[in-house]
Image 1: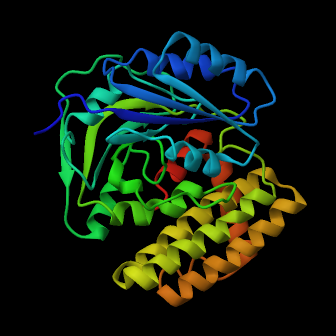
Image 2 (image 1 turned 90 degrees about the horizontal axis):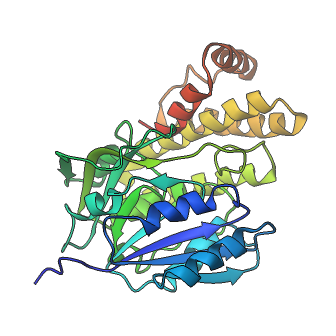
Length: 328
């Protein structure tokens, strides 16, 4: 018999987000759906984030706090999974917030089911409606490629860990690789492969805040080089488990490389140009072996000019759109 109010585990990694943490946790605290356990993982914050988190633990028994040395968001999410008791799992970035009925609307179409996740739309503007009526959903089954393309539907948080509600069995064996960036895109293929159904909830439920400390909104540094690790993981998965999607995975990797190359151009430092060259050469190779977009990557200087012109004509909202579409 279906449990009408299953426990939902919400995992929130925290690192130096004192300016936004209360707003984030309030949006969880005030959810219309009440049967939650909120697992706060303080990843070695140096500001007052820990004290703020402790305040929520004191005032609401559904909140618990785990402190660890700074190990990065992947390790924090993995630590949170060790404390999960719920039938469903949600990951939450600590500078975001959700509509008051978000969890209720994500749960309703998947309640009682396993091997499934739901996802709602998101906005980079703080314009969330707090109550939604006439919720429409679209259930997608079919092949892995069919489900993969559904996850990339416009307006949805595609390959991010946040923005989704997963049945617990999805993460029975899957863990985030310990890399500093791209850890969620590195596991999205096994996650989608582990489910039989993806449910799209056609309402904007999530506010994704663009701040300097956001994972996808930082200056180029050595951690951005972990994109090569992510690409290797995705290609290995396709070759070993689903060779029928290999060319599509090459396309995904090229698209994400393109986005990071745009950031390299915007950054403009000598260090970012080292990464730019490595990404261009990788895309040149990917386009050759997959026989896609070969005309795009014939000359690095021409491609650099193309990206510079793009940055002149398009603002950051467009660039975020490219990131969101990574890979349509």
